[in-house]
Image 1 (spheres, helix red, strand yellow):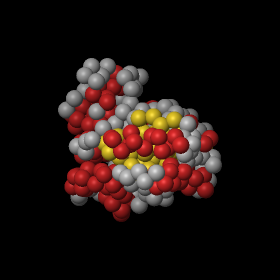
Image 2 (cartoon, rainbow, N blue to C red; image 1 turned 90 degrees about the vertical axis):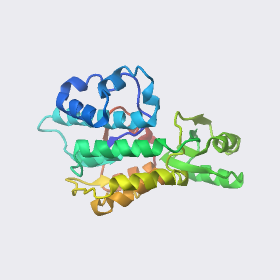
Image 3 (cartoon, rainbow, N blue to C red; image 1 turned 30 degrees about the horizontal axis):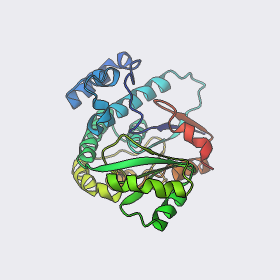
Length: 281
């Protein structure tokens, strides 16, 4: 059983998608009209350094993910193993919903733009990747060290966790985490404490963008990064709003996919997620 997965913010890079834009001119033109700028120029050349800005990074990653998936699936022969389910890491879940038929590409892009703007408005935060210890050990170390205002934000693998919080608080937690056995604590290039309760203002703002949106039933299951269970279209607004403040449960999601019978994981737009699989028991 095969699952196609989609990465989220953080995989953006100059040159991203250069081989895709000429293959899908209508989609790219429509995306430019929605966003009000050239996605090709942003991704391929990034002349103003905007890929480091959440407002631009999220729509760019979303579109490249989507185009790469379309190219990948269209190029498969008749004997290829069908995709039986989809999943995405944070932002990538919107790609999973499009691939499964829950949303149209441009409707999802509009939501991604609104999400990016809401998240970018929460400033003063920081995130750091903690290597060498799991999320439970990270959380325990933060409690023992009486570190306040720092939360587990991404449970990426048994040996990689992302924490987030106030900038000074995350910096101050580094020593505590190293004492607990972390091999490295690496700051991430983001401006907000994503996937923590500190993002509540962004969740409230994004909830307004979700009002009145309808989500179709998926053609094949999409696994939610909040619940690690099949995405319920009837709860779409609640799940996607919660995604902004809740940790990304990637470890639980992968385990749930394996329990459902997935034996093969493919990834659009790189290998960020599939490279984590060997470290998820």
